[in-house]
Length: 383
Image (tube, rainbow, N blue to C red):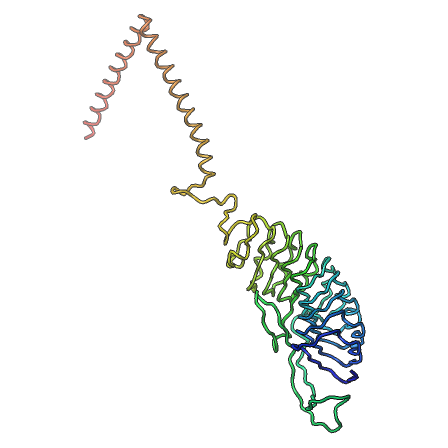
């Protein structure tokens, strides 16, 4: 393999088997390499580091193994798309990945990669910048079928335009992206053995459209600033061990069309706002501590009202008030009875007091009668 002027190589969707030949390193002008969906195995050859202007590399859907090499970040600085999906890569993710400042599509899903996400992900500046620097490619191809060593002299050439295309898992389904791929800024690390928390640096990738971390062993809380990813359309954190409350800032992700937080340890109230309440209950299932709409679990303090419009807490308070009133009535009755019978008993037992009391009532009656007669007379004269 000595085509040093070759810039585009697509051997995808074949039945090639074996290892990737080390001679691939001679393709120093290579910009696009697609080996997707074959039966290739073994490690990525280190000679590939000689392809220093490689921008699009798709090794997905093979049986490649070993660690993700650190030289990818150091020696392939032009990479804007790296696809290692559905292979057998293991070990930790090299922090040299952060050197790829042009990277806007990273798919390492369905491997056995372990460890934590590098803290330096904020250096993936292509996911911060607006727009896209990826353009369509125009290549010259030679129209012949049997290649022995080099194109025959004078062979007719044909120009063709090629758009990078990827098979990406987007909003829970797989889609083929072609002409619009340049604007797809996405990180897919799903179905691995990654642990730890989501680095705060990820929340600085302001132009990120899709983030899929499902099917790992992530734990801890989701960064409070995840709401900074205003352009996020797809977020999948399902099947991990995330805990704590769902950040309130997520209610501001107005472009979010797909969300999956299921099967974690989230707790507390789902942040209010039409954005998060608009998703199906399956978005939140498997988090027994969550409450609030759209779930049927009622948050404390929001108990349903009875027929009178009163909550159970109000009944508890009312019960306390009723007990207080009951004792108040008993005290009043006892006080009145004691006073009444005290007076009557005194009048019955003491003759002098009894005569004086009835004489007082008789005099009071006469005074009231005289006052009424005088007032009636005055009213008649006024009429």
